[in-house]
Length: 147
Image 1 (cartoon, helix red, strand yellow):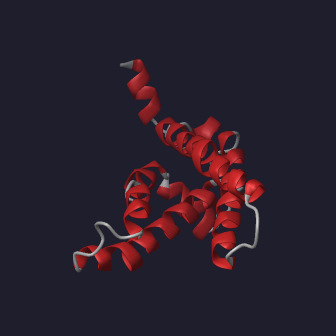
Image 2 (cartoon, rainbow, N blue to C red; image 1 turned 90 degrees about the vertical axis):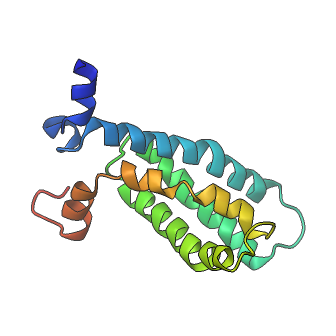
């Protein structure tokens, strides 16, 4: 019971008023970024031979860059919050602009977009992990307390 109270109670001095559960979830996402997306993107970038399709190369470079920066989130989860917001934004945008129209017309299943949709459909969990009040105070409103 004490642990439950701890993870759901805002921790003011240590996490700037953010609940520890949010910190743990953010660190989990940063770890998953490094373990899966960063390793796959860097492996592809370093082992690809021959000429690149410029859009494919750009995608892998963006994934390698943001996930590598996300590794810093393991140490500083709140400072690297913009990386999480970037991930949430691009995945949500892709789901709305690409996957939803295909799903609505019944052409998503079996399409090349189906696998990416499966990978991106978990974005609501990332949305839950973000301490939105902290984000708006520190990155949108830029209050005096912002670090």
